[in-house]
Image (cartoon, rainbow, N blue to C red; front, top):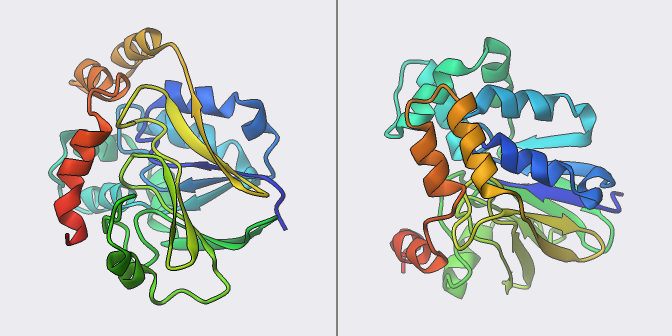
Length: 247
């Protein structure tokens, strides 16, 4: 039984944002840190993976679609995103092997919540879209195969934090550490005995300058300006993702 679990999702290779969250006292004191996917696809992939790997058994890793895509790129199958194609080429073989071995879901017992299923997008797929305003019928569809005892599901993928009830289950999306939509900051969640959405502020100007100077990605400065400054609103993201949930 875990008393406190910190959930970090969608880090996307943004080292300054990750470091800001890891410096949070509640993260440092957590029994476990769970990563719900899309960990390295960004401008500092090697550095982010090394920092997390150094935490050893304090971290539980779950696969995201971008992690799967990095492995595919290294196998000769480029993806549509320049940053992912570049990031895949930077990774060491041991890092690629780690990403290739990640599970689609992990279920852990958390105090006050019981069995909690952690996934990236949905329990059955690493790139399906469900949103805070998705129809009840849509939630019923993507949760249909879960065991009855799993009454909390933690997902990421859409980079927007929310909690809601769906089909009698608590759904938690911690938002994104490295590519937040809706406002700057690094978003994460703390579980046990309830579910608490958290935001860690950091010096965005300094973070952008650091990414631009430390990353070898040719468009690192533009990437940091767009994503660390959170140029995309939550309304923009909902409008973009909405059609993908079958509405």
